[in-house]
Every structure is written in C-alpha cells, then in structure tokens.
Length: 288
Image 1 (spheres, rainbow, N blue to C red):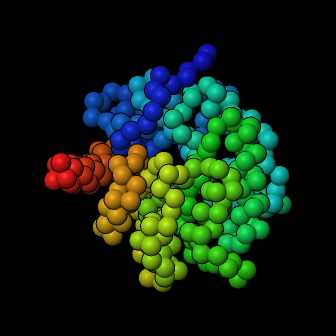
Image 2: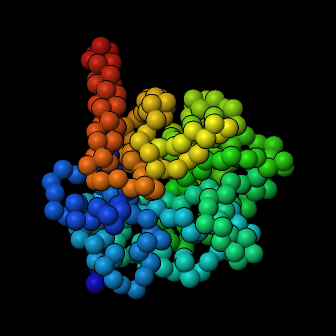
C-alpha cells in the first residue's frame, strides 16, 4: 500500500510524534500544523507504530528525523539502515528528511549518543561525501542538525559554525537549526550564540528545533526533557529575525509529559511567531 503524504509543503509549528500521544492526536481537535516522526521507530516490517503513522500522515504533514545514519563515522554507511530509510521515504513522502552532524558508531559498535565531529577540513570533507552518498541514494536533499557538545577535540582548528557551513557547502545539503543545541554549546564552550546564527547561510535553513536542557552546574546538558528555557526563547526570537517564520518544532524526548504540556509549549512558540509577523507587517506598512 502506498501511503504517500497528500501534503506538498511544510509550514508553521510542529511537535515530535510520540507513541504516548497517538490517541490524543487521533481523537482530539487541538493540534500543531505538522508532526516529526523519528524514523528509527518505524523501520519494522509492520505493526502498530506504522499503522498509527499511516493514519497521522493522512491528516498532517510529517517530517522524518533520524539518529542512525552515523554520518561522521569511519564505519561504512549502514546499507540495511539506508534501505529501510528509503522504503519509508518512498512510502510516506515526508516534507523533510533529517539526521545529525555527528557520529554514533565506531568499529561497528554503537554508542547510542550523538558524538560531535573534530572541526577540521578533512572531517568536513569526509562527512560531506557521506551526506552526498545518502542524498543520491534517497533521491532528495537531506537536512543535517547541529548537535550539542560538552568536549572539544584537540585537533579542531575551525569553529563549530565554520565547520557546519563548510559541510553544508560541500554536500549541498540543508540545515535543521536546533536553537537549544546552539545555546547549550555556546554556554559550554563560551562562544557567542547570536554570532553563530548570524553566520549561518539563511538559504539553507529549512527548519528550527526548540527543546529543554538541564543546568548541571559545570555545564548545560541537552536532555530534550524539559520546557524551553527563557534564554533559548530569546535566541529563537533572534532566529526568526534572521531566517523569517521558519517551520519550528517543539522537541521533547525524555520524561515525556502529557500532550497538553507540549501544546502549551507550542502556544509559546506561536506567540513569538505572531509577534515577529506583526513587526514585519508594521515595518511594511511604514515603508508603504
């Protein structure tokens, strides 16, 4: 059965699709404009998760977001994983497909975490070539997401944002800009988050993520398990000025709360959207 999405574009505010909320989504009326599905949860041959995804994809635009490509690894690309990912993409035709600017495996062992890259031109060339291979296999551009980090490689000589821009240009791919991750890394490594945003190529940014972190005293920990912090909202406001009203996702991956809590977070994002659009309109009216 072909469950290709009837939706051709992505706009507005979205939520991460979690199994705890399937019934809320299918039975309720107050919803976001789209959902992001974690592809790694839907790579089985069948079962209830795929059935629910099919039902939700009939009602809402969906995007696919993965953690298993291990784009920065020295291991060969996992062909079985790629085959399953392509089958999902072909079946559901998501509005966007994304993964992370990181590595998750080494010598065939998976660390079950998103490990940052060394920021060198050689590493940028390596990961860009692998992104190109994935894009050619899937038949579409993908988005890569900046990850949060806590340590730096001694060999790094590029800044994180310079490394990211180098990869985007080499691979001709797109960017999923995680605002929370920028803030966390900026605090942990003492760089200017606003300057980071200002240096990103706006034409490659196609989606924004918002999430929560925990203050561990010595560092910030990106848990994606708490409300969006006030300082991250402020950085989001700067991102809207820089990139415009970009599709934005509220991401909550651990200690997942009731659906109503996520909708409240979404309403906060909507306030920033509306405020941004109001300023744009006022500026246009003034110029006119």
